[in-house]
Length: 140
Image (tube, rainbow, N blue to C red; front, side):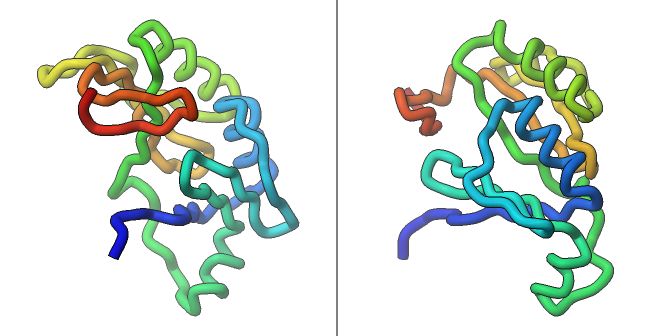
């Protein structure tokens, strides 16, 4: 079996507010959207933001666990790109959780929460390479 994640779907309370964060903050373009979900094509996978009640109905679950038990990562090509992106995400409705700094293990990173409190680590890590298509690979 292939090691892959095809789609990551985040439950959101206010879809237009969430869309603003991802479109204006990250600069991503939706590839599909309706009144319940917005999909963004990533590099080899898809990120979905799904209105929380509709997601619960789709999964046949109620009372989804609130965000915060995980972090999504967005790596950038250079250390000087971390803070400006964090500031742009905050201006688009996000909230800085941890200002950018250098962790003991190396690199440079900070954390931003999206409007629904999903944590994003914005990082430059010299141990990760990013190819011309934006795919991240562990190692040089």
